[in-house]
Image 1 (tube, helix red, strand yellow):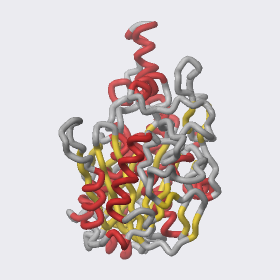
Image 2 (tube, helix red, strand yellow):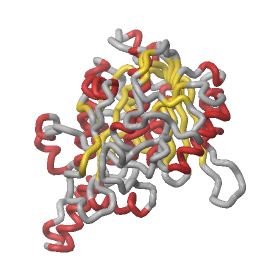
Image 3 (cartoon, one colour):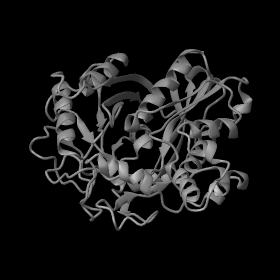
Length: 404
């Protein structure tokens, strides 16, 4: 084993594309998946726009026995994991019994399933509550169901750092590879589009209340008013480079070369936010310098104060406008536990094809954001990409990936 972690398989379920190539085609074309909420009646809420995965029929992807015991979130995760394994041409049974791990991210669990069963309890009685409620809502359910379905007996885990979790789970998968395991399934998928998942986000005060999908989520814009939530994410297959080479892997999307995570100080502590330290740590972990980074996929909170903090950190590290910055999540919304994993997959596709995807609906960055914001797809000789994510509660994570 080499201990070098590479990504060999991608599975994507996103609001602007079901499947990796459908998502990537739509993303390069600047096609947004944001629209009025249809998964529940949002007319009574101040926020009414979301990114919903289109055309997903669970019965076409999931065995019938799993339908009653899984939430929409877990079905999307299982589908993405199937696609990642198929993309890599890997049957876990071909590896040692304890050779494949699984670590995913979560924000709070399967809220749609949980809400339904609690409604049954309150309105009908305990006899009407599904026995599957005991685990189907659990925050670790995606890791558990992916492991069971694919008979994975390697190390497993779940990271609960909200939007930062997708990067943190990939960082943990890299640790598995460095410890000598040949492969790990990682990433994140979320689906918070129900009242139980909606109300806590509204309470944060960070969600956009603009009802026009084209104006609701405008990161780094002078018109930014907050973020739009979405569902979906990405599952990645991460392998030891030598083990992947020995089995004749069809594609290596890139190498995970640097990772770091920090936590913001308590409000009023008088210390700066931790995002800059996370970025500097990931670049140092990769053995690189700031000038070696070819593109940044931003966290892009859509909250004016959060965006200013991020653009200031980037300008402080790279210099004003010195590196292209993009936020393709402007087409999907912020996917909570699935968002950062989708950004990592997007970065790998950008490295593969030598093109930076756009930030849509924003013509230029506001004057108080000294960054080179990419608003139209831009061809570029890309070698390395930096992916950033911040989770509610002060979590900061950064990941560097490099083209093989």
